[in-house]
Length: 138
Image 1 (cartoon, rainbow, N blue to C red):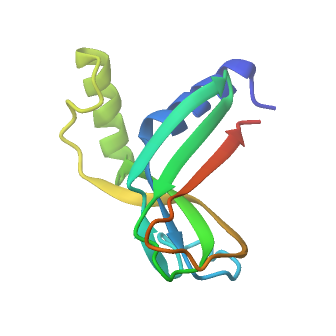
Image 2 (image 1 turned 120 degrees about the vertical axis):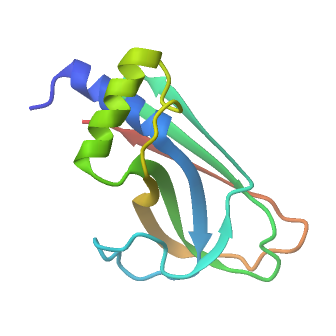
């Protein structure tokens, strides 16, 4: 069992550190050790996260430049420290400064989640694709 407060804080963590999204045209199952989409077509031109409830995060991504492309996968990505010691350093700096950006940690962009789906497209040069992923922390 996860407490309600922990669910709320995990949702806040996802909202804070998830910073981008990508679409691709690979449609097979996800390899759990993958750190990127199978075949990236485009990165999000805009990306936002919203807490729509205490334990629910909406990830909103917009994609342009998909002319002639068909997409079959969507992934969200977070910028995170690379090891436990750096998480501790980030936590300490946040407590001292109140800011995540004040840390001097080494970070990597990691894939938080990937979803494959039936093909969408092909798109024209003027098409804009908006994808919203709603995630509930349970």
